[in-house]
Length: 449
Image (cartoon, rainbow, N blue to C red; front, side, top):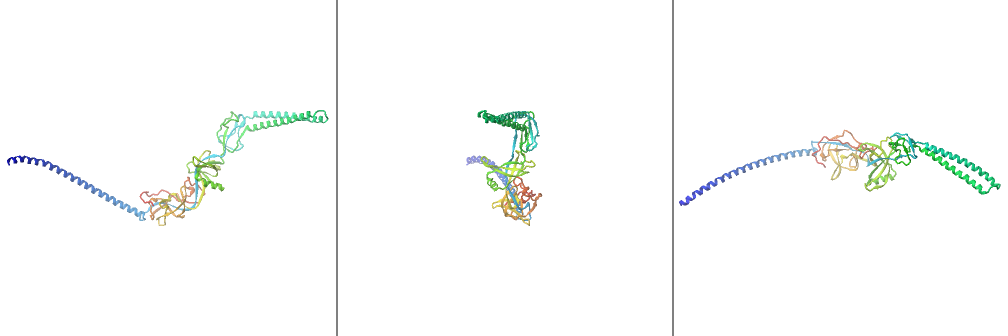
């Protein structure tokens, strides 16, 4: 027993020494677990409080918007316009180039020295005005030579004719044979031919003298001088002396898609006169108004377009050859439509609609039928009456029944002639449109129908 006790005592001591560090490590682990748990609890509480605050704020904001959209105390500022009854022109738009009806390169028809240039570069000349002169002296000499030859042949013919009359008397008396009489008759006829040839030489010399004075073949504007005085010019020269371009009237050639050909062709075939407006390169300013002259006889297969030719009086010379223009061809006019700005018409699952402002400043969704849209103007054929007020800006904050604060544009109502020139350049159409401008209300947050 003593041995056993003596042997067990040291073992028990070692167990106690080994259990002490283990207990110490366990206590430290529990401390870290508690700390982590406290931090997790605090983070969870913080997140819960933030979520509740955000939910409350969103609920309050949604309630406020709901009241505004439902027509409560909150009113939405919008821009409005008044629909008016009128006519809406329908235009086909294309790109065109100003092309002169006539362009002439003036050339000399005789050879000689250029002694005088009677025009100024860029001058407007009329048909028959003197442009240049070729030295006429060589042709005057040729004329005198031809006249001298004519006088000689006339004298010889006279002598031959006198002899012929004598031969006739001698033949009647039987002095000379018939052959001699016939020979004299042929001599007279030969001189008749020579006289005609001389006369043609005289006429040719006179014509060449006329050609020495070069005149304008048409009325137009001369370009830059191509030959200076003192140079020798020839009838075979390819460059010419000057180029004259007709400006009044002048044409514009433009292209349209082939899908629009039937409408234009039908109008021309009926003999109707189609109006054409030419606008500047920016498509903002109308330059001139003319009429459609004709269309080409074929479609360009590479572009799918066809060419049309219009003519303009161009009395103020506002159209210049080879100028680029935007062309607006008036093909139709739709009558008795309710005219509103394009921004007033909205589109949804049920089709097109507008927000109509009632007398109580509450909006109502109203379905409409769009007949035509030209530039900034939309023509409504059904669903809208003239005089009704529609919303043109701020629709994204509206619902059916929303209360609004209507604001009109400071520029007033516009007509189709005053809208964007890209599609509505007519100035003679009897129509009206509505206004559009910026609104002071923010563009965020509402529900669009």
